[in-house]
Image 1 (spheres, each protein chain N blue to C red):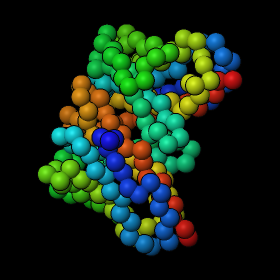
Image 2: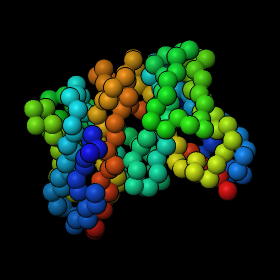
Image 3: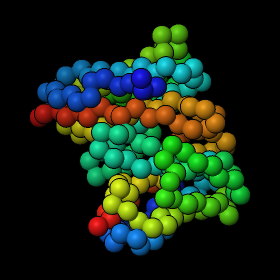
Length: 108
Length: 116
């Protein structure tokens, strides 16, 4: 079993829809990262959170440490939100474990 | 402030050739790492470093070599390129030892490597 599972793997939605991407992990963690990778490759950090909820613009990330689950929400989605969203958690010995990513495509 | 600079962006190699992917950061980050990204596999750790003079292996280290002589630079060397090393490579860094010490991860723009 992978230590980080993301769902769905692929998601296509219409512009304006509310988007939810889920991340479940099997290891005990101190913090979790959400990353965004646009077509063409660049990866940027969206959030790092260890409890509760964080909001940045139309993006909201939540985490439930007890349930080992995090969600990334996008409100009023836009075609420019089309990207791969990746969650990552700490592994042993300063290593990071990445999910395989969720490919999001927002149709105009 | 350039962040994480990774070069080259694109490279084609012949089997058996060697090359070095360069990674430099100007943020005084202690933690630097190299990943490869393959379709359906996600990011996999090749090597990482928690400070100058210290390196360690990740999940897929075979065929790669690293060194960390300065805080700023963390080059990745392909010793004898093989078609299985065709991939997209990312360098990343974060402040302090361990990216989960409350620190953001910064990525380079990626290097597309094809081995023929």
